[in-house]
Image (cartoon, rainbow, N blue to C red; front, top):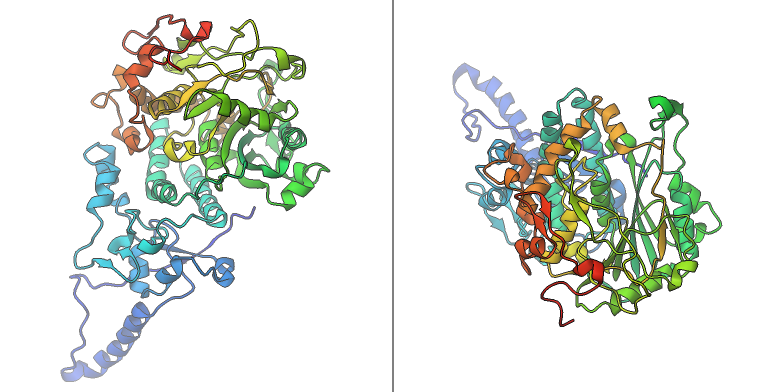
Length: 579
C-alpha cells in the first residue's frame, strides 16, 4: 500500500510586535511605501482566502495533508469539508497547533499531564469556539482533541472511515521512519525520547479522537481476527487455513499488520555459530494469500485489511497489535492470534460458542495453544490446557517482570463449560469486541517482547472481564522458530547493536508502574515521560488491582508467588463461587 503523501507548508507572516502592519504614506517615501502596501495587501488577501482543497492533516510542523482522491470523492458526510471552508490563516493555526508539543519538557519532568495541557489549551487568547464549524482555536475540536482533523459537534462521534485510519497510520509510520534515521546513533534514552515526542505530537492525539469515533458494534456474527506478522514465511498458510476451516469465512475479517524486509538484500536471523547472512526479500504474506485459490475471493470482497510496515519500523509485537486493533470496523467478536497457527475445522464458531457458554457477562477465552504438531481432531475430546503458573523473572534482561510459564492439562475429562483462569495469552484470545473500546491498546509501549500478557490480564480483570480457558483446543501454534529473524535484531540494525535490552528494560517501567512494583512508583520512576497519559491506558474501575494480585498470589514487594490452587483444581477464584 502506497505510503506517499504530499504536503503543503503554510507559514503565517507576522511583524515582530504582533501588531497588524500599517501603510502610511508620507514624504519622499510615499511611492516606495505605496508599492509595499500593494504587496502587503496581496499577502493579506491570500491569508484570508479559503483553501477548499486542503485540510489539517497533522499536529505540528505547519503541514497540511492533501489527499486528492478523498477531495474528489466528495464524501457528503465528511466533517472536514467545513474545516476546508475556513480562512487559510485559521487552517494554518489548526495545522500548526502543537499545544502538547510546546509543553513536552513539562510532560517529561512530570509537572503536567497531557490531559491537563490539552484541556487548559482549549482556547487561545482572543479566539473562542466557532459554533458554525465546531472548531476551537488552536485546532482543538469539541472532543478536546488537538489538530489533525478537528471535527464539529454534530460529527464528533461519526466513525472514522478505514481509509482515514489507513492514511493516518501510514503517515505516522513515515514520520517514525524519518525519526529512526535521524536517531540512528542515539542511546536507548534518546530512542525512547524521540519515540515519546513523536507519539505525543501525532499518534496520541489521534488515538484519543479515534476512541471517540469508533464504529458501533454489529450483531451479525462477524469476527475480527487480529494477525501480526514479523518476517514470517508461515503467515500465508495461516491465513489460508483460517479461511478454509472457518465455518463462516464470509463473516471473517482480518486486520493484518505485515512487517517485512522487501529490499533486494535482507539479513537472516541468527544461524548456527552466531552467523547472520544475506537473504532474499521476505515472502509477501498478503500477496501470496490473495493470489491463492483460497484467498482470492476474500481479498476481492474486502475481508483482508492490510497495514504494511518496513522491518526497520517494527516496534515489537505489542505495538503491532495496537496498529491491528485500529483496523477493526465494528465486527461483533474480536480474536487475536499469531501469524504461525494451525486450525481445527469450524474454529471460529466453536470459539464463539465457548465464549457464550462461559458463566460471565464479560468473558474472555484464552490460553497457550498446543504445538502445531498436535492433531487437533484427536484433541476434540481432550480438555484444553489452562494458563495458571506465574513466576517473577530472575534474569536481569527481564526486569523481574511476571512471566506466564506455559499451560498444562489440569482437568481429567473434557468440560462442558469453560473454567476460570487468571491470565490471558497474546497468541489466542477471544472476546466481545467492546474490549477494544474499554481496554484499548497503549501507544506508549514500544520495543517490548514481554510484559504484555500480565498487563492485559490485569487490565481486563479490573475492567470487569472474567478470563476463562477453552474447553478444548481449537488452534495450534508454531513455538520453536530457530534461526528465524526476530524483531530485536532489527532494532539493533535500525539503531546500534545491543540497544534493545536496555531500551526494553526502560519501557517496562511503565508496565511495572501499572502493576504496582514499588521500584516503579511515581516518585521513583525516571524519566517521567514513561508515565505520559498512563491513566488513559491502565487499570479499570470495576475491580481493584490489589484484589487481582491477591487472588493470584502475587506479592509485588517481595517478588514472590504464593500457591492459590483455584486455577489448577478448576474451581472458581475466591468471591466467584456462586457462578
